[in-house]
Length: 97
Image 1 (cartoon, rainbow, N blue to C red):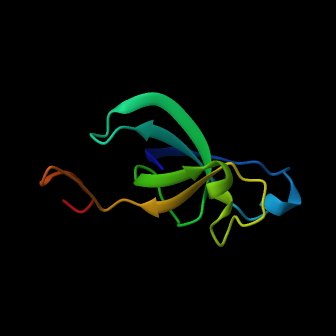
Image 2 (image 1 turned 90 degrees about the vertical axis):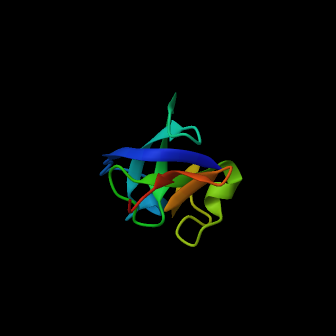
């Protein structure tokens, strides 16, 4: 799984018909302390994530295992919105803080 921050969207009006109705988000990959790694991924949003949210993504064949992406030409999917990150008993991120 990949931890990332939604930083934008990609709009493609012309695409494979199997991708119709899907929202594409630009996800900046971060480490567990939310520091950017310098990598980005375009992911189909399966959970309704918004700009600035910290999300969990899956890539490869795992990206095609959600209800929305099953049997579709998808290589990355946002499959969770992070509420809290805790390391060693200390919260390093809390969405509603």
